[in-house]
Amino acid sequence: MSERVPDPRSANRPPLAEQIGAKAARKLKARKHGAEGVWFGLGMMGLVGWAVVVPTLVGAALGIWLDKNYPGSHSWTLALLTTGLVLGCVNAWRWIAKEAKAMDEDQEVDDE
Image (cartoon, one colour):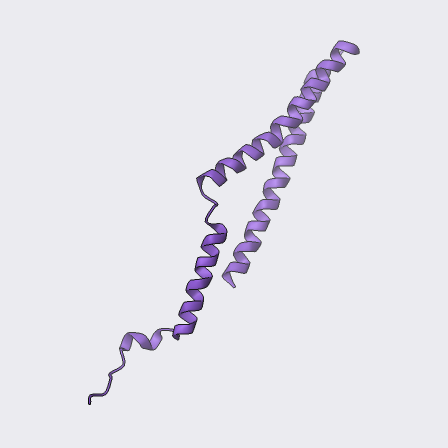
C-alpha cells in the first residue's frame, strides 16, 4: 500500500474543529446582524427624524398657544420653536452616540 502524502497547503490550516467553530461563529454573527440592512437604516433615519420633529412641533404648538393667550413684545412661537429644535437635535445626537457606542462594543466582542 502507498503512504499518504500530506498536502503542503494543510500545514498552515487550523484543525477541523477550529474551522467548524469559526464557521459556526460567523453564522451566528450573520444571524444576529443580518437584519440590519436597508430597512434597518431607513428605520434609524425615521427614528432620528421623529426625535427632532416631535420636540420642535411641541415647542411651536406651545408657543402659538402662549402667543394667543399671553401676547407680548416677543414671539413665544419663534422662541419655543427654536428651543424645541435645539432640544430635538441634542436628543438625536445623544441617541446616535449611544447607538454608535453599542455598535462599537458589539464589534469589539465579535472581534475577540
